[in-house]
Image (cartoon, rainbow, N blue to C red):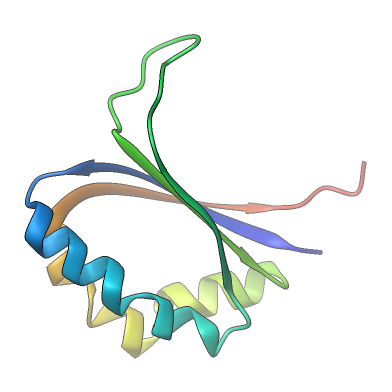
Length: 97
């Protein structure tokens, strides 16, 4: 079943965040990952949410999603990510129903 990684982002340094965004796609392609969407928050319709941006990645399965995250190529970008933004990454597995 497909798996998704969703990132909730609060940008701290736009230049560093842009560099991270430029470099990260090459890290998920080897895992058959794809960028589903990137976007900026338009409105919070219910509850509280302080992220300004969101990213959604799709992988063929949860093992690929976690393999991408744990890969040396992606791990090498984490310091740049942390300098550029506060990011919460969450993995989800598509349910059958």
